[in-house]
Image 1 (cartoon, one colour):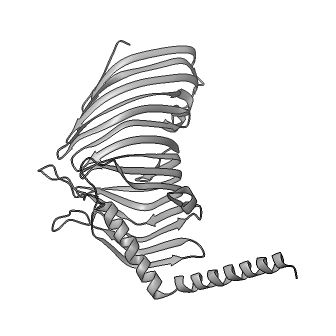
Image 2 (cartoon, rainbow, N blue to C red):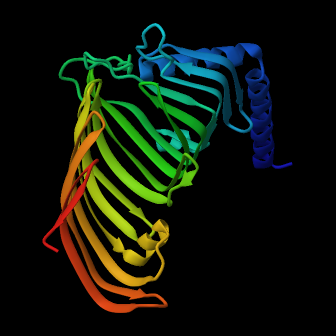
Image 3 (cartoon, rainbow, N blue to C red):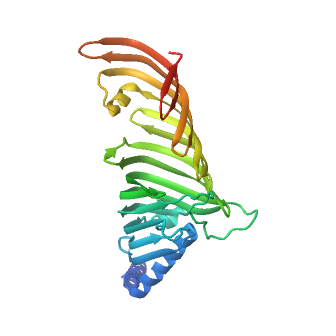
Amino acid sequence: MSKWLRKLLYTLGTLVVLTALALGVARTSWFQGALKSYVATKLENLTGGRVEIGRFHFSLVLFRATFRGLVVHGKHRPGESPLFSSPAVMAQISPVSPFRGKLVLRRLEWDEAEVHLYTRADGTTNLSDSLAPTRPGSPPTVLTDLSIQRLTLARTQVFWDGQPLPLGVTARDVAILVERRSPHRYSGSVASRETQITTRGRIFPSLAFVARFEVSNKHLSVSSLSLRTSGLQGEGSLNVDTFAPLEGRVSFRGEGAIPELAEQLGVRGINAGRLQWTTQARFRQGEFEAQGRVQARQILLATPSIALRNLDLSTDYVANRQRVELSNL
């Protein structure tokens, strides 16, 4: 047997032994308990709230972490529910994570989760501050740099001051970056190549989006939002000036193909045309005021009783919950 072949067999044998030892250690209750404590500490540093994990299991073979009874507490008061809770959360880690310099998940799934958000009369919320260390004047601290190849949030309930919003989300190629600018101010970005949202039995068209945001415990700013779905695309911004009372501003500009939009709305007979619209709106305590302009070009309307070609329409509008006014038709 040649010298290089003996070295190769020795190396392979050593790798097999080390792998077997690693798999054996990974199955021990000591390792699982130590990893559970480590993960809980990392989540607490990220969220700033106390974290409870009922049961935890990590499979080294599958690179998969399973949580049973995951609870993240915010700054909730007596009688208020935790910020986040889910009976089952599963995260499958990609083996390329160590080489990418960030956490890459093949899959992240949870089921029957509840998210509770509270806004109070003094303007505070139940959101906690991150416990990750920071120093005055120091550069932004990266709290989360995460890629998720497939995200599934099934049968999720989001509660805002006790009001429920049933929500289901499936997404592919999600990227999340969160940085802390100061002890109470965060910024970052979130993007997805394909996201589908369901709520109250309604399924929205799949969309791709990119957003940049800045958030504190009293303010939210989405400085840029770009989205694309079913022949439609647009960009805009959102500012929540105060959470209690909920008050802010929205602006959006979009364009797209009228036939695809009509199909989503269940309108038949529009076979061609382009749509452009702009809107600016303010909202406060459930009320809103919006104004903007809508332009439709080269509309082709064909029904059994009517046929119209090259139809152009444009109008300005003002709207609130009680009325819609059109002008400059």
